Each structure stands twice: as C-alpha cells, then as structure tokens.
Length: 62
Image (tube, rainbow, N blue to C red; front, side, top):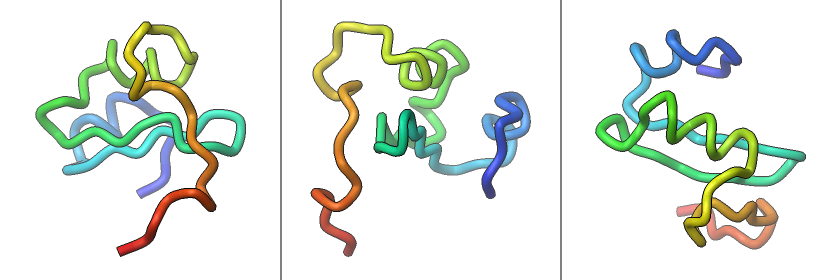
C-alpha cells in the first residue's frame, strides 16, 4: 500500500518503508513502526545513523 495517511499505514501494514526527497529514509517492521519513529524518518530528525537517507540504486533488491 502507498499512503500518506499515517494511522492507516500503522494499522494495516506489516512493514513500513519511508522515503524522503526521493531516497529511502528507513524501513521498519510492524513492531518498530510507531508514529514518532515514522515521523522522525519523514522529517530527517533524530540522531540514529540508520535514519540517514540512502540512494535507492545503492540498495540490493533480493
């Protein structure tokens, strides 16, 4: 599903992928996906190294 409605995403998804500025900002499983965590990824706030965007072409697709 693709949605900008955060409550919908958190209630229906088993995995959340957040993009910011055309780049992957993070990927969370259902247990990790809280509104606070997703918003940090969306805005780029937070000190965690994993929150830094990655260019999608740099990621290997299984």
